[in-house]
Amino acid sequence: MRKEILRNLATPFRKHGRLESVLKITRLPNGRSPFVHQLVIPHATYSPWWADAEFQIIVRQIGSATLVDIYRLYELWSLVGQVQHLKGDILEVGVWRGGSGCLLAAKAKADGLQAQVFLCDTFAGVVKASAHDTEYTGGEHSDTSADAVTTLASRLELENVHVLKGIFPDETSEPLESHTFRLCHIDVDVYDSARGVFDWAWPRLVTGGVIVFDDFGFHDCDGVTRFVTETGRRVDALLVHNLNGHAILVKTNESAREVSA
Ligand SMILES: C[S@@+](CC[C@H](N)C(=O)[O-])C[C@H]1O[C@@H](n2cnc3c(N)ncnc32)[C@H](O)[C@@H]1O
Figure (cartoon, helix red, strand yellow):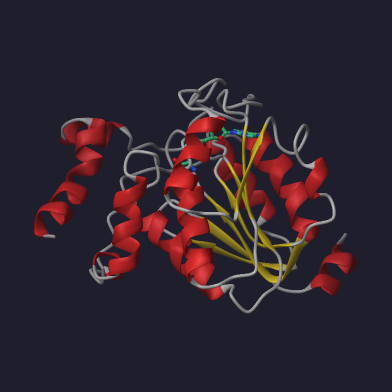
C-alpha cells in the first residue's frame, strides 16, 4: 500500500513535469479568466480510501478506464452509499471508457439500490466548447467507444448499467424524460455541456439528491468552474466546493425553487 500511496502523491508532478512546471499552472486572474489557480495540497491526512477493501478492488478492476483520481472516485463511491434512502436512478454524463460510471454502478449493486445507472457519452469526444472554455476546443477524449464501456460493465457483472451514445441531452435524453434521479455525475469538461446537462437533470433530481460536478477548479476547465459558481447561488441548493476537483450540489427544497424561478 505504501508504494501505491507514494505513486499517487507523485501524480501531479508526473502529469505536469517537474516542480517548475507545476508552478506554471499557478495563475492570477487575467483577461481570459477571473479565477486564481495554484496546486492545492490540503494539510489533512485522513485517507479512508486506502482502507476500504471493496473500493480498492473496484479501483483495480476499472484500471486505466478512468481519468478520475482516487479522491474523486472515493467521493462518488461514498455518495452512492449516502443516497440509499432516496428514490430515483443514477445518471453520469461524460463516461469516456466507463471507469467512474462502472464504479457508481458497482457500489449501487453492492448496496442493493433499486436504481438503474445511465452512462451517457458522445463516444466521439467533448462537444460544445465555446469562448467560456480557456483550453478545451472540442473532440478531446474521443479515444473510446460505447462497446468498451459495455464490455467493462459485463466484465464487472453490472446488469444495472445502460449506455446511451450521443450528445446529452440533445440526442439521448428522450428515453429518460420521465425518470427521476438521486445522483448525477456531470463530467463533461466545458461550460455549455455542463449547463445543458444541469438544466435537464435539476428538475428531475429528487429533494436531497446530489449533483457532482467533476472538473471544478481544474486549471484547464475554467468554463465548468464558471458555470458552477454562477449556478451554486440558487436558493434551493447547498453547494460544497470540495478541494479535490469536485463541486457538490445538494438539492435542498423543491418549493424554494418554484419561488425563485
Ligand atoms: C473527461 S471525460 C469523462 C471521464 C470519465 N468520467 C472517467 O471516468 O474517466 C469527458 C467526456 O465527456 C463527454 N461529453 C462532453 N460533453 C458531452 C455531452 N454534452 N454529451 C455526451 N457526452 C459528452 C466526452 O465525450 C468525454 O468522453
